[in-house]
Image (cartoon, rainbow, N blue to C red; front, side):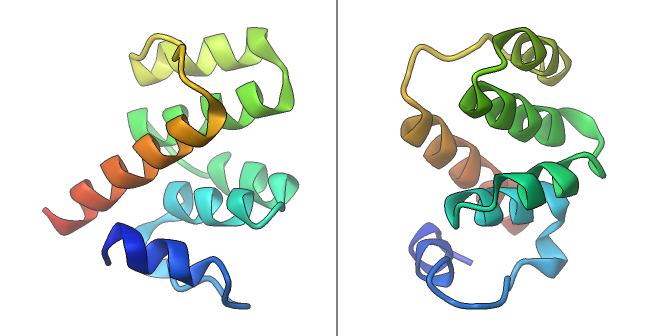
Length: 100
């Protein structure tokens, strides 16, 4: 799936992302305005990618302390960029890993 395909999928009613994993699906739900569903999904993840999405979600929520914990687990510094830029960076990174 390309990044453009992913963006188009957000306008659809059903997530096409089942085979790409819960971290990626969490980004899809977040972009659709379903933060709670995104958080529920990302809680089922392990590894740095899931921790990065989890950190982003808590940053978006405004919980900087919780976000800092998840950025640490993701081995990433909290970004200085805006939320939209970070969302795009995460999505592109996850898409690259899904293709490899």
